[in-house]
Image (tube, rainbow, N blue to C red; front, side):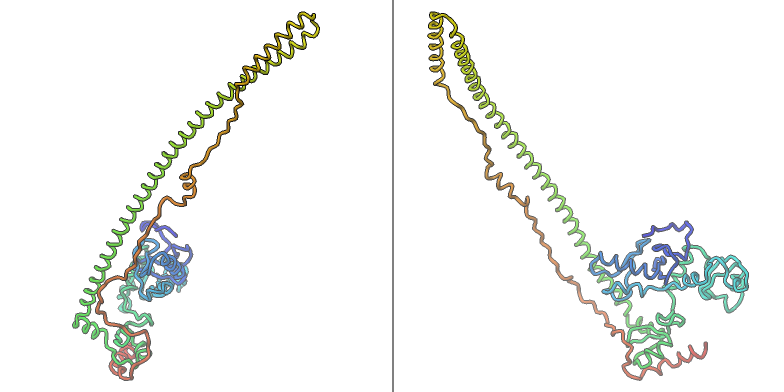
Length: 412
């Protein structure tokens, strides 16, 4: 998405700020930002998917909210009802928006300084002067060719004009009560020709003001908005509580984990210390036994070596040495009988709580109480409009506005 360009920066008024290409079927928003029909339509659809029951969208540049003017359930159609920007279409088709088109038709290239909305042409300073002098053009609406003034003025013109939505070259002059729709004289001769209740705009406005319909609608909308504000505030309070609760649960979980870690560290230390103590104790026992048996083995080796050596001695020496070796070995046997053969094996048996802990799948269960209740809003007394159908009820209404048709067709 293109970032918003400051109003003091130069801006190509014929380029879409989303796709950075020349406008294709430009559509203008109430905030005066203009986008290609396809660009704004795609944006509306994508942004609507992130909301529940969307009723509008925010401008991609300034974020101003734009309410839907058509079927709220069908965001794909919202862009179709946005007013077109014929001026930019005209600038694109005419090519160079910086040249005066009347002069260009005379093969003169003069820089344009203003845009005439009535003629839908860029005009130079001299042509602007002539525009103001000639009776037929002095009332034309013009503005300086500077962004955003040009687009802003066109936006105000587009949103506040009296053009017929179906026939842009005609002004709305009638109101059909059968269809609750404003229309031009051309509409009246076609789609509303047989409608029973068609009146002039002036009569419809006078009747609406006389019956207090406007004030009633203001009251209904204000009450409706107030109820929505109450619901929104409750939802915001709920959201704040949800954030606080979730934050608290996160902190409690972290604290629990720290306590579990500390307890496990304590158990681990005690267990390792116990292993060390027991291993040292029985290591000492085995070491002493091994040393004792080693000494006796060496003692036996010496006896064998002495017996081997006395074989070459005299009989007297042989007998003397033999008796000594025999008595020594007998004494060794007597001092060995009380010794025990040690066998030490360590084994760790995991306690059942630890085994159960390994089977633990979650620290705690999280319960969500989510209720979806219908909005308890009072029924607003809004008069229903008929379906958008141009089928006539009866052939009785044409004469009521024949004089307006005559005025429009024969006087122009």
